[in-house]
Figure: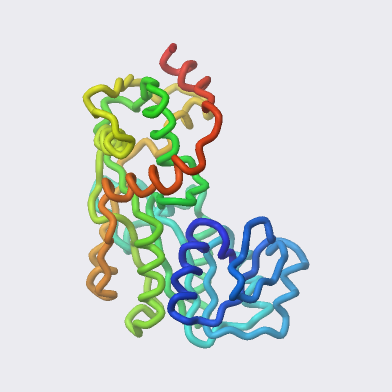
Length: 300
């Protein structure tokens, strides 16, 4: 489900190299590899019925956000014989004083990702063999969420960078290639059956450290980057979104997936940001971005 954008596209390439026989269900808005069966349709419509009569060894859902979206697929195809892989989110965790967050940490019922948590619970009760992945911020070439792009835009155009408070908030990013590798490995590991894994980069980094790492990826001297502190409290919803990451510490423990799947992230943040800059940002440069919200927040 999905397969032509970001996580899905990256994983499909790896599955093809491994020789898997693939079917992808997408809306047809992006190119599909020639050597896969493409079923075009919107998963939130009756077009999902195009899957009727089809049975699969593995179903991978990298685009589902609600329980009904995933449940509807299973209602039509039946459970996969081998495994159901589901891309959830570490965004379902509740803020906690104790970090890093592990797979048993409390869930935030008010999270905008709560549909993914509901899907997880249903999978656990359904008897369907599953493996669930909870990434933090996913980045890398093809990212349609403006994460690294947000930083690159300001650095490349010599803009001052708005930064919440003193920039010491810790966050965590994981490269899309590393997530796809972990998903691929899980298919071949019995221990991954009915397991949930945090999946991200090995280390956390402060907002300020992230900006400095992005500046190096852009070929800039971090000491020449102008940071302008602002207080996110009291801003309206639009103003709070001036910064592309959640304004609280966000750090997960990835030791379980490292231990059980013998998986380790290949991309350090420095290597990953350089990969994004060279293999995505520079190749897909647009007209000068709009910085109106920045100006509204910091005054210039």
